[in-house]
Length: 249
Image (cartoon, one colour):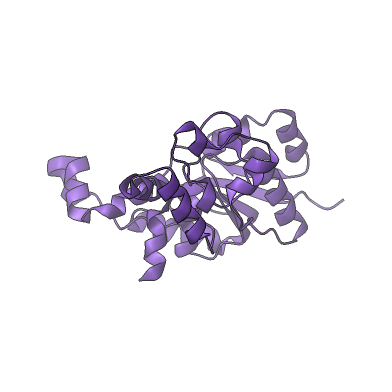
């Protein structure tokens, strides 16, 4: 009987909400645990740097040089690396740090002790090391996480949907948030979450990242029709997607 695949969970700069999503999966989690051997999970055990992993699941963004060194070591020891959650896949809310000079950020956070703390512009994991699979969202959508983990264990591809959340929203027969007088980023955000937030009465904040070829004309028409302030739209997009600009440099 072949040994179970060794799976490790790691976290960097984040709230660890995606790990909680995994922990709260209930019976479905038990089914997964029956097929894998979890050898690292900071929530419940210390890291062991003397072993290799079949799959490393990484949460959080890279925000200092120590994190850069650590994620490179994890990558070297892993056959497959999954970035999960917005912080890991697109930089997430930590990317808002990139709006300000680094020295200003350090002084604001650490005061007189700032010189003792290292910092770099926030990066998504894939901007530092090779990532094999992405599970976007803040937090991750559990059914998608399960699907991606299964793909990783079977060695088959998984492509994050590259069409708008609006597609799923219409399939779920939701009333458009714009009709309710709310600004929603569904028209330009990647689907794959089954319009989770809108289903539960919230707007889309763009936590899954932007589609690669957004319908700009359509978005402009919506903005004009509902007389929406462009600064408001830009601020909402900035909340999760600031690290995209690093790829333009």
